[in-house]
Each structure stands twice: as C-alpha cells, then as structure tokens.
Length: 173
Image 1 (tube, rainbow, N blue to C red):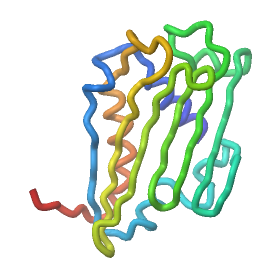
Image 2 (image 1 turned 90 degrees about the vertical axis):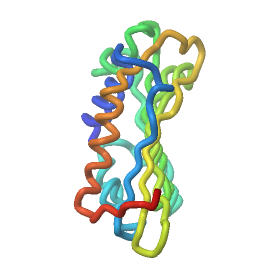
Image 3 (image 1 turned 180 degrees about the vertical axis):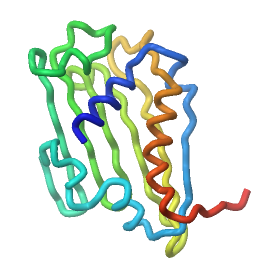
C-alpha cells in the first residue's frame, strides 16, 4: 500500500497534458449497500493502510499519516521537480467510514497541496453512488505546476474499477 501511495503521489506531479481544472469528476453507481462498497474499496479494519501509521481512531473517523523528511529514503522521488528545496512530504488518509475517504498530499505543511477524494452516497437501500474528485492544486506559488490529466484519470479509473464486483446501476438522465 505504501508503494502504491508513493506511485500515486509521484504521478500527481508528472509534467504533462493539462491542469487540474481540465479534470472532471467520475462517478459510478452500484447495487450494494454503502458500507459494503466502502469496505471493498478501502476496508474498515485498517489492513489496507498497514504501512501507514494510524494517528487517530475515533471509530468511524480515522486518520492515517506518513511524513517523509528530506534525507529519508525515497524522498527525492516524492517532491515535484519544481520544488527541489522542499523539506517534508506528508501523506494522509482521512476516513469517515462509510461516507468518505480523502487521500492528501502536502509539501512543506501545505505550501503545496492536492488530493484525491472519494464520497459514498446512499441513494436508496442497496444502491450507492461513488464519486471521485481531485482537489485543486493549492498553495504558495502553485502557478505553473501542471498535472498529467491522463494519469489522474487512470488513478481514478483504477480505484473505481474495484467496484466491478458489484452490479452497476444506471441512473435516470
């Protein structure tokens, strides 16, 4: 899982084909209870994040966090090329089970920040809409940084593909 987070984060800052505003939300509605869908995507026992320390556990609210400082193994591959002076990278997974998971990436305590957010909306008993959005890139001097939109769409699709075990529900237009 830690390796996957490093890959996701590195992909966020690959120079590429557009900026954050060009990305659109992706959703999928499935015939399954929200709790079951959430568990399929992220688990509820913490096993999916065993390589990342659990910082707080309020039952349905959990925060997993990993901070990598300059000089630690892998640090150079986690910072954007445009920010060679960076000192710290933070990964956080905020979970509000079964409603939301927010994966955050931050450089130097929010000087540069973005994230991936999944929300789980119960439309009816046994029907759940999963929405995936990408946070705007924010922070000091974020202008000029671009994100590889194709890679971001691929990350979103990979996550949403985990829902293929459930029957898809077509929503009325």
